[in-house]
Amino acid sequence: MTVDTGFATSIGPLLAPAAEDLSHADRPIQATVEEADTRGSYRQLLANRIDIAVLTPLPDSPAVDDARFHQEALLDDVLDLVVPPGHRLATQQAVDLLAAEHENWIAPHHDQNRLLHALCAAAGFAPRTVHHADEWQAVLALVSHGLGVCLVPRLVSLTAHPRLVRVPVKGTPAPSRRILTCVRRGSAEQSAVADGLRTLRARAAEEAAARPR
Image 1 (cartoon, rainbow, N blue to C red):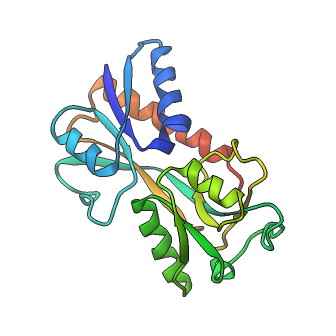
Image 2 (cartoon, rainbow, N blue to C red):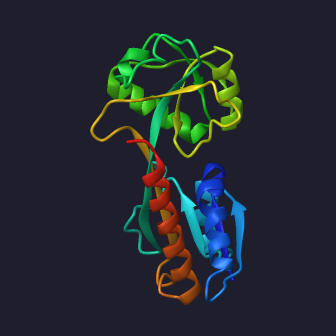
């Protein structure tokens, strides 16, 4: 059995289907999935409470070469500008982030909000955040009512708000959040952990292939 943690938006497209795949493999593995934030995932790995973490590193996270962990890039989750229907940018094929300089912004949860401010600063402006919500579906509800715009990762589904418009943001590479797998150093070769990592990589590759370029 493996116990895996991941942030909320990684569970639907990555962790849940990977756990299902493992349960139906030739050598079945029962994987238990738990939601956890980045700091909690590192702590649980060190405490031997989990085997694999799927996380987005923070500025104060352990370095990728930290001797306690084995960390690998899993997916670069591209961020799109999400706007309400009828918005002046909704018909654009792609936009420079600076095009949204004078918009009202919805501030997402703390970690993602830091990324938003860093990306906007790199584009040359500070976002005017007028509303805040921790859950992505709450952020999308605020955008759908015309209360602001937001940078939203592609792992976040817009199914509940089908009229919202994703507008790709120009850049080489496009703005994104890095998603890693992390295990305790030396455990990646263990049979169940290796199978779990391999299955997550396959699911991430499928997810990336299905996303618009």
